[in-house]
Image (tube, rainbow, N blue to C red; front, side, top):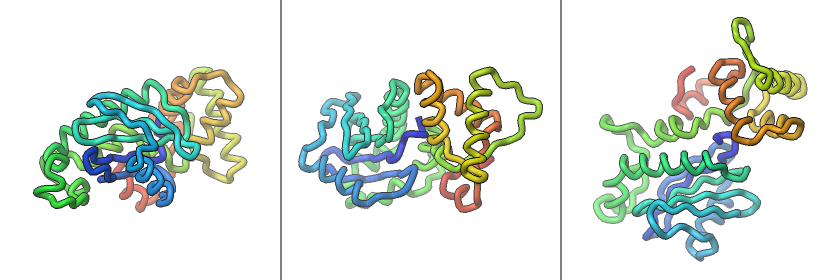
Length: 225
């Protein structure tokens, strides 16, 4: 699922203002402004009852939004959201509201609209960055290389994807992106999207596919390998 996520956006329902966003790729301020305007001018259909989910499209991207008590959380994707996407969105929405309930409730009173409070560190809870990484695994959007196969057993499906990765490495001179691998394999084999994503994720977990990590990237994603 992380392969298709471009933005994670938290919007305050009453004010209709974006209070937090995270991008998994290149930041596009024009798109974010378009998203904000689409909410304020009611171009997008957003869920009205807590726990409801709505899907929509905007400028060729796929949106899925879940309503919390005082917020909406929207995932903006480059592929149609799956059932798994809905489940993970539900999980993240519940964690976010539970972890930041006071900040959401008192955002425009005690905190005077200061949205930076969602990024502040606390000794009593995970940071929002850590929660996002735990839930969405955004490091999967980094460039990848191929690791050694010695001592690792791959089933037939994993071997097919591994061979595709080797071809991509040759074409791109040393690295590739998992979304490219996902799309190329999908053109040639009849995996469903969830099955294919799971196989690729397993190859990453087993260090057959390795993220290319710089110190700057480690700090950005707050992950350790």
